[in-house]
Every structure is written in C-alpha cells, then in structure tokens.
Amino acid sequence: MNSNRTSNTLVSSQSNLLPLYCLLEDETTIPTDSINARYSLYKEFRTFPQKVFARLRHFQPQSGCFNKCNFCSQGASSRIIEFSLNNLRNIIAAIKAVSLEQTYSPNQITDVIDFDTGHFIDPKAIHNSPLIAYGREDRRGVIYCYLDNDPAIYPHIDTFSQLIYENLGVKTRIATVGYSRHNQKIRQAFINLSNPLRHCLAGVRLSISPYTYGWTEAGMRAGATHRDEFEEDLAHFINTFKGTGSLFSAELRFRPMVDVGEIKLITYSGKHILAYKNYLYVSDASLESLTAASISDSHDHALKMDTQGHKVIQLEVYGNWKKSVDLYLHGKLDGMPCLMHKLQNDDGIYFGVNVERDQSGKCYAKFFYPKSIARPQSGHIDGERYLLNAMIDTKITINNVFWQDIDALIQGLKDKAQTLAGIFQASSNYIQNDIIPLIESYVRILKMAKLSANSFLDKALTIDTGQICNLGRAFNEYKLLASRQDLPMTPNHERAFGKKGDLANEGTVFRLSPGGRQRISNKLGRTNNKENEFIIEELDLSLTSSEDGQSKQYYKFFLPGNMVKSMKQYDEPIIVGQIPTRVTYE
Image (cartoon, rainbow, N blue to C red; front, side, top):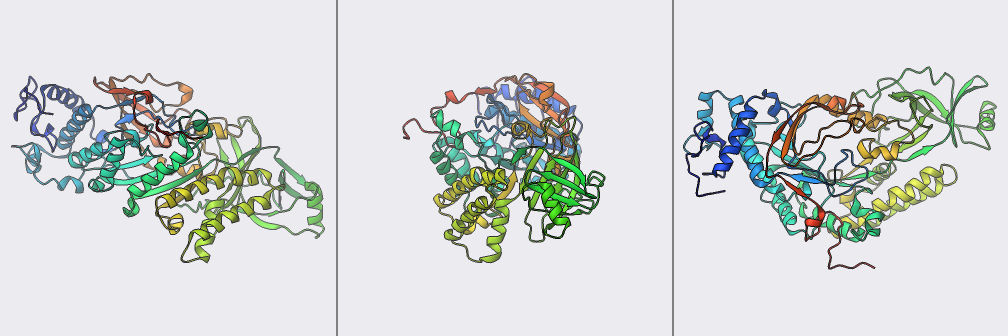
C-alpha cells in the first residue's frame, strides 16, 4: 500500500479533512488515491443515520456465484463482481472512522485512538464493543459475508475477515457449498481461517445438497464437474476445520417431496373426510371450520402451534375411501389417531397432520393443499423427516456408534422405502432417489476426512435441515402447489422466513455489496448490476415472504476498480467438484 506519494500525515488535497483514524490497524501510510477515495466515502457515510452501520447485517465482498445451485434462495447471478482489495480496505477504513464518530464524542475518541498512529490504543476494546452490527437483535457483533454470493470463492476471504475483526470489532459468519481443493489461493485462505485467524470467525456452515453444480448429473454431462471431485473437495474442507469444535457444521438439505393430485374434502355418513390417493383421514367435526393455526414461537424447532391439533383417525385404504370408511363405521377397521391443524398461506387454506414433533424430536408431518383460486393445483407435501427420525432412533439405541451402525441406518431407510412402495409410491421414490444418495455421499465424505461414525450423529457437526424452503429459485420445486416464490408452504417455512419467523423478528437491517443489485422481487425485475458501484440497502426482513421483496431504500456509490470475473478467467478449478484439466474421468 506504500507509494512515493504517501506520508504519515496523509498528505493530499483531502488530508486536512480526513481524520487520522481513517488508517487501518496494519497501515502507517497510504497512497494519495486511497486518501481521496476514503475522503469521498467518509463524506458520504457521515450523512447516514447511526442505524445504518449499527444494524449492518450483510457485508459482501463479492456478489454473484459460479456454483449454479438451481435452488438458490437468493437467485444469484453467475456474473461475479467483487471489491478489489484496495477498494475493500478503503470502505472498511471509512466505516471505521464514521462509526467511531457516531459511537464516541470527540473527547472519548482520544481515549480510544492513538493520534500518533491512528490505531486503537487497546485493540481488544472494540471486540467487546464493536463499531458496527451492535444494534441488531440477532448475533450482535457478527457480519454475514454472504447473501447472493458464496464467500468460499472470494480469494481474499481470510483478509476480509481479519480486516473487519481488527478494525471494526466484528466476527465473520461464512455459509458456503464449498470450493475446489485444487485452487491454491482459496485453499490457503481457508487454512488461514481455520487456524491462525480462527478468532475472526463466528461460524462456518457447509451446505450439502443435490443442487450444487458439482454434485449434479448436469455438471458431469458437461464435463465440468464430477461427483468424486465433489466428495474429495468437501472431505478436504471438513478436514481443514477438524478440531474447531462448534465453529464448523455441515448441513444436509434435501429436495421437497411434492406430489399433485385431487384432494377430497367431503361429508359422508356424518363424518368429515380428507382423502388424497392412499391417505385417508376421518373427523367428527368439519375440517374447513377449524381455527387456522400458526407457529407459536419461531425459535422452537419442535414447531408448537398456537392452537391444539384436532383429533382425526387415519385409515388404510382398501379399494377406495368409501369402502374403508364403511368398514371403520361398522367396527371392522381400526385406524390410527392423528392430530390435524388447519393452516393458511396467501394461496389459501391447507391441512397439516402431525405437524408438531413428538417428545423424542421426531417428525411425521404430512401436508395437503386443496385447489384454490390462487393455488395452481391440489396436492401433497410429505414433510416427514426420514433421516432425522432414523438418526434419533440410532442415538437412542446405540451409545458407541460404528460405521456398520450407519450402514444399518441407511438400510433401514431402504427398507422404509420398500414398505411404502405401492401404497405411498411418491414417498418411496423420494427416499430412494433423493434422500439415500445424498446420505451415502455424505458418509463417503466423512470417511475420506477420517472422521469417526459418531460424526454422522454429532448434532454439532451434522445437521439435517430437512427440505429446502420455497425461496428464490427453489420455486421451481414448489410451483405445482405455489403461486409464487418466497411463499411459506409449511409451518417450518413460516418459522424460517414467514411473517412470524426468525427473519421477521430481526426487523430492519442493512447490507453492503458490490454492484447495484437490489433485494426486490423477481416480479419487479432486477436492477442493472454495474461493476463500478456498490450499494448500501435497507432491508425489512419481515417482508421476506412478501411479493415485493425485502428492499426498502438504498444508496448507490460510484467506486471504480471493482472486478468482474467469469470462470473462464481461472487457470485453476474454483467451484466445488470442478474437474482439473489434467484429470480424466471415464
């Protein structure tokens, strides 16, 4: 960063107006162009209310993503715009200066900053009282470095995390689908983050799903990726963070099981019936007249509802639903008691059976969606958590787990699929085609990383998040039963991003990102994403499930020097699963 045109006194046309604490902790001098850039940013940022940086949630060093996940909740562009390291440093420095002035009086600043160096007198002080992200209810002092990007393919992610930790007092939270272990720069960045810079991190979440390009058949057909590479890349990633405890976790995400067909809601022989293919429920009271239920606490993963479930009897179908109901009414067929809730989203009412988890934490939920004016078709979502239930059963029965026990768990799922075949064929196919292959892949990854079988059941490491939500491009999976994207389809969706959900509880926050793309609905179009600018945007997270999107207002800034990248520019692989040019797969 040094230059012939620099000095400790920040000599430039703006130096007498730019405070010395616009220096970063690792700087003593900066070039004139950085002084001018920082002064311009400093002037702009000073006009902001304090809440902008106090409630900053997302600080993205990069926008766009190469991973092509076709369920991407953020609808990320494959065109990447990223801050140059120089631009990143200038932005952080300007935020540091403005946040100091917003947090402290001039006299107090002299107690915090050494005016001979521009550095903090006590560098540890801002970690107890961060300069940004301190006004949020969720994860105070933590910055999410992602939204419509994957931070694992930002080559300076280690430097970014260190800079905002040392200069703004915040830790970085990373969520990623992984990176290619063949990319030496990114590989080294994560080695740095896992060890010498571990203190700069609030958490690292690895998302494993069948949608990542490196795992898909499409990637293999194109000759760009291979599943063997995918698994070795993730094994390397997991191994890199081995021994970091709760800092690192891997989340398994599955396709939703969506099935379409006729929902019958009828009265027969004084009973109220819900019938869908081989699902049959009998009630003494009208199901449509039930009070609509909602989640009672977004922090409760057990999904307790705000009204009691209504008792219904589930019957096996013999021939047709009428025959089964007649047998039941004549005492010749027993049924299984269940609890049903009437639920509602913007498309209309729907029904959930056994929505709440049982006392052991297992989930057997089934959801049924009658046709409505807004809802495209009628049908069913199988919300049963087949993997989670099997994991709970295994942990209950076995103390010290070996890999043969995990093999037995997988075999149990195969047996479950066989049992459902012909009766609930869609669920049988779902277990066989969508759940088991991803689990088997994850098991191979853990073995490559030389982890024990206990790691598969360790809830601090392995998290079964269930089915993906209807966010962004995931609408392609839900469009048979949903009129639009970002529409909660189950109480679990409502808990995650609905009007009573975790995101809604956070209220209004801010994001900073290169390019000018706004967080508005696809329905309203997308703004041009220009490389020589960046955006600070106010987001209302309670509007995540709305038609119009989260964006409330935004500020755009001209900033030359950002970089636009495409995968063709890289000599080394970058995305997880990408095949090195020297490797050939038959």
